[in-house]
Image (cartoon, rainbow, N blue to C red; front, top):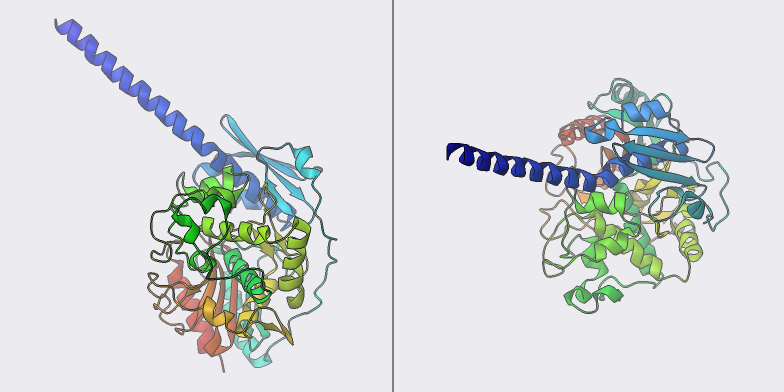
Length: 445
């Protein structure tokens, strides 16, 4: 009897172990598009858009979690990167004008056959930033040196630019990075998407407060969602923005062919306009909707270039698309540090680039107005300091904030723009940013 009981227990234990093993393998398999896709996409963009060294990227940007175990092959002739982990692989493809797209649902040849529809731009800066006050530049030089060369904020800065009264008063780059290097925005791209909405509101292409005519939403309460709800992160749609798991944001960026469609297909959890939750999917819904207001990709991309980038003198900005051809507004904009500084200055100048108005009067105020439920921390695709997140910076400061430490700090009361780009995954970097801002502000005249 005892032997029969022991055999039964052993069978149960083996079944439980087998089920756990199978479940673990299935879950790991579901992570494969994220693990391999993250490595392939980000390495390809770093190499082919930013011109960085593969070994440097792997040792710094990709040296974490399962990502560091990928075997990456960079094909410089075809401009692709293939990343492999265990039984899975992902490929990312570079195309002139578009930048890099993570390959999903097509072959490399099929994707490469889709050419960028606009003429490629020449190099150069037709609206260069002027140098600021020489005495202030001298006072900030030691800070710039400590910040970049000595890794002042316990991360790895790639670029550091400070504008005061529209002029450069500090500028420094990591070795291998120059003023012409295009660097990743991560979620700072959301703020540029917000500016694009402002342009389209000005031109009558969209309305902030009317329900959006998205076909997939017309059969339920999602039909009441407005652009204003989306810009303020109050769509009410179900979403998981956790970056360390098999979350919605990771699946969207690394598995989906049409990122906006994936996000807008989520069910409603809260009444639109009543619940604040930060969602990268929201921005890709917006970008997909903006694209739908034009007859073709050519018209849409021409509009972005003409209305946002050309007035600022920004050339060769790279707003990388998903497989559907829509720019990934949540995450994948590449520009130089000076370009990002120009974008910040546009908001200090109330939406004007020289004599040209880029977006309407009042758009800056709208962008920096606190959204209910955000405790004074969020506006319209911009983060705010109304809640005192940075205690030593003015309350009127607002920012474009991106993953791993990408920042454009805009401080109207100090006529100040601070740009930080690099790799800083440290979770308490707010403390470091507060210290940096304090030290900059203390030396202003």
